[in-house]
Structure formats: C-alpha cells, structure tokens
Length: 490
Image 1 (spheres, rainbow, N blue to C red):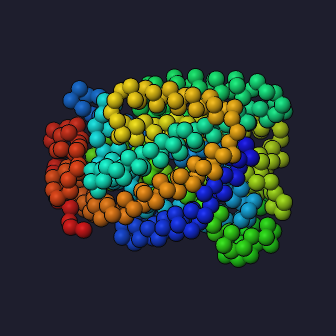
Image 2 (cartoon, helix red, strand yellow):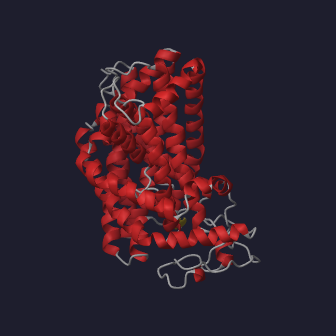
Image 3 (cartoon, rainbow, N blue to C red):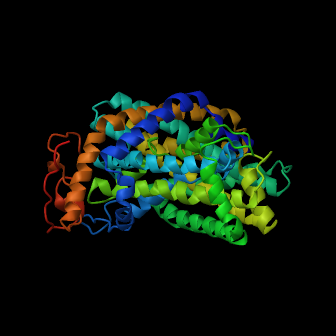
C-alpha cells in the first residue's frame, strides 16, 4: 500500500522531471495554439458526440464498440486507485496549490489527448471484433516506422497489463487485509484467486465483453464517489470558499503549512495530472481506436472529455474531500491514508466499507482497461491466436501474483520505463500532428454546414497507411449520405 501511495510521484523521478514533463508541457501548449484551443472551444461538441449512434455493418450489427464504450474503456484505465492515493500524496507534499497545477495540466493535456486519439482513430485497422489501433499503429502506418511501433508496444505491455495491473491487484488485497486488521496471512491469497477468476472470465470474452463491463462499472463508480464527495462537502459547506482560496493563493508561493516551495507545488500538481489522465502518454489512443464513429475527430473530442472526467471530476473530488475535512496538513500522512482519514473522520467508521468497495471498482476496472491496451499491442506485434491466448493467461497469473507480492520494485521500475514510452509517443504525435489539425478543420467545416461530419480516406489522398474509412457507406453503415468536401492543406 505504501508503494502505491508514493510511487506515482517518485518512480523514474529524474526522467519525468527533467525530460518528459517539459516536453509534454511544451507540446501541449503548441497543440493548444495550433488547434485554436480545441479542448475548450468544442466542449459542447464533446458531449454531443459522446452518445453518437454506432454505425452498423451489412448484417445490422454494430461495427465495433460505441463512442461511449470507448470512453468508459479509457476511463477504466485512467481512473484508478491513483485518483485517491496520488492526489493525497500530491496535497501532502505540495499543499492545496498542487491542485491548481493539476487542473492546469489537465487543460493543457487535453490538446495532446485530442491529437493522439484522433490519430489513433485515423490509423486504426479492422479485426475480428471491430477495430483496434493506437500509437504503435500510427507509428507504423503514419510514420512508416514499424520498429518504433514495436518498441512502444513492448514498453506498454510491460507497464500496463503486467506491472500496473499487478499493483492494482496488490492494492485491493491490501485494502481487504487492512479491514481485517492487516494480520490475516491467507487473505491476499483468497483475494488474488477471486480477482484472477473475475479477470479471466471477462478478458477471455474479448473486447466487447470488456466494453460492456466498463460501460456499467465506470459510471456507477464515478457516481458513487461523486455522491460521497458531495455529502462531505455539504457537511462542511462553510469551508468551501476557504478551500478554493487556498488552492489558488498557494499555487504561486511558499506554502508555510507543508513547507513546499513553488517548484515542489508545481511539480507535484503537474505530475499528478499527467499520471492520472494519461494525456500524451500513448495509452488512451488504444481505447479511442476501438470506437466505430463517422469521423476520427469525434474520438479526439470524446477522449479530451475523458481527461476532464478523470482530473476535473474524480481527482477534484478527492482534493475537496481532503481539503475540507483536513484543514491542517502539517505532518499529514501521504497517499490513500490521507483520503481515508478525511472520509472516516467526517462520516464515521462505516464509510471504510464504502471506500473499500470504491477502491475495488477503481482498481478492477483499471485492470480491465490495462489488459485491453496490452491486447491491442500484442496483436500489433503478432496476430497469432496462440500468442494472444498466452498473453491472457499471463495477465491472469500476474493479477494473482500481484495480490500477494511486494510492490516497491515494480512501481519504481515501471514508472521509469513509462517515461520512455511517453517520449516515444510524444515524438510520434509531434510529427503527425499536422494531419490531426487538418482533420479538425474538415470536421469544423462540416459542422458549420449543418452536417454530421463524415470522413473518408479520399479526403487525405496524399496520406498513405489509412486502411479503414473506405467510403461513406462503410464508414456510416448507411447508403445515402452527403459527401463532405476535402480538408484544406496543413
């Protein structure tokens, strides 16, 4: 549990602090300017396309998962125990001001998420269950660099379905053990067996079963945690103005409460935002590519909304719970313990049970989302069915072993490797971003003309490697649709 509390802010610290985060921030600002602040300008459109109708195939079946299911699939991986533990650590180290920089990073990162998710949609490929894609695919088909795609795929598989999923399982086991006093040695084994069984039941059913589960679990999880936070805020409503004031005033100066310098405040907030919403990291495009939509920009917008859902909603709920219920942060415990103390101190011991249920849903949904990211990249490396089945067995085994193993070494190693993965993806989306902006202009033009935007690959004739988007009929699943005009040059 202690490793989970601190690792997202300590693992691979040098690489993240001096290389990844500066590159991410600079590219995020560049994407924001080039896109005309798409992450703010098209917020209404994000909600509109979230519930978009799923195109059907010639048999009347959905071509793949829906836009909303792709949203919940990415949210399942994004929203994990780190939304509780990581925010607690950021506030304990950087004070209330860290929340401001967490929000700032979400806004800037929204543009990066738009670019990478749009590219993931454009360069997706068909498979037996619908579509798959992600950074490995736009590296091969967009940049003509398969070696780069394989490098990315291998790193992602090591980090997400293996390392991070095992640690989510470890958190569930530790939480259950803590509810029994932490001394019952057989509990992690039982928890591991149950988690492994549930994971096998779902992942061996493929993408659509995973999507159906996340479609049900993620909204319920978010709603439950939101209600919990609103109850605590309502019980301490008189402190809310003070909390907002502390978030903004302590974002730019020395925080005497926790002794955090400006650099510490900014870095902890920025790191929390990045690790939580994964914008620019390269994980989310694996989910965005699964959706059947009529224009790549639609998933760019949906996944930008996912950044806000993760950080501005779920992470902010945690921050308000802590800052309202814990006015004195001096000597505060880091991580999940800080959040737990704030909830139990306000609502009483019974809320520990509710928090345990929420933690289970957070962690288990992350295991499912992480698994699919790995599946998409396993199929990129090799389409052999036996290879995929072996991967599924290994994931189930890792979930079991993660429940009973120590987490420290895995966290620190995985976070450092994840920094390399982020850099590989950032290079790719920087080189391909011009295509995303052309798609955005085409989308905006069609919306202004009063049409539901439809993209076909003849609109970008000079861009090779686009294997889907053949014509309006295959894209939309209908016959009679108006054709859109070609996108303008970069």
